[in-house]
View 1 (cartoon, rainbow, N blue to C red):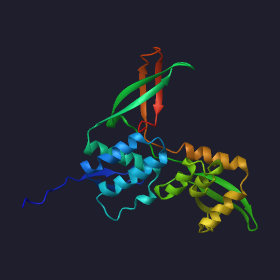
View 2: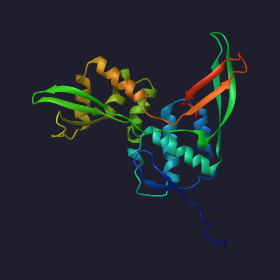
View 3: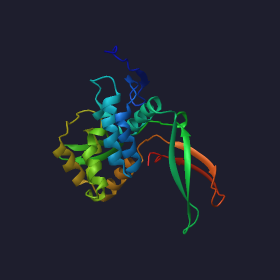
View 4: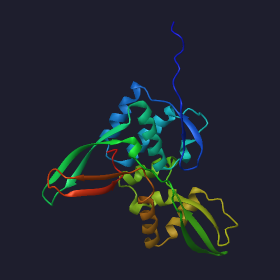
Length: 236
């Protein structure tokens, strides 16, 4: 019998909260997850797969990934990829040269060049109640909101209402006191009371939540145009 094999642990600092956790490389049995991520074209399926992979890679058994924002989950996945595979990620970039022609470009990026700034300013919406004005705060979409992401992906979420409900985080008076503990029913009632303009405003904030990104700059081999773009969807 061989001696017990030691698996290396790597410390990382979570950008969102400054906590240090440890990750371990994923093994060949998880290669199927990478293939699925490459083949799936929607954020819900990506996050579902990445969530399962992180449950294996994060060493601390008591670390709750349910509270991680979507952007931070993607960032941790990049770190896991870096120690498990290599420090280079490959993807295809499609540049639309004109209305009739597009150029597919195979690209390689270094994981060290991927940037992530988790800073996110929650959106506060003032509502009127029988007890006076209150502030409702809408914040990050997190891993625990996976089902809301699924509904949005399947087109079963009118104007992203379920995502808006999921992002409904806190309710307090205008002084910042008298916080009300919100149930899911409370959140749904609040969102249903909001005018469409507010729903669209919150939806736009959700769509622009922080995610890892890469700054691309190159000349298109098809049309010769100089491309400079901030790209977030290099997973797909």
